[in-house]
Image (cartoon, rainbow, N blue to C red; front, side, top):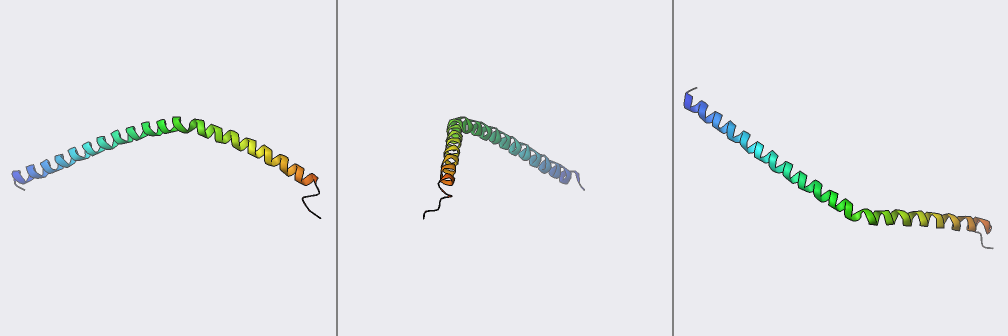
Length: 79
């Protein structure tokens, strides 16, 4: 192979490598930004999730009491 052809091949390979490096850097920056957004969303929804958990516990306790009362009234049969 003549020297100019090798030089062109090497230049194309180096250009491709540089493009891949830039692409990886852009993707890493985007992932870092998205990770920050996810942490922010977690902080914002944490109080609502805690309230939902507390509500679920209250609802569960109320359903248990209703079930027990229902079973004491003759297994829920009318008649």
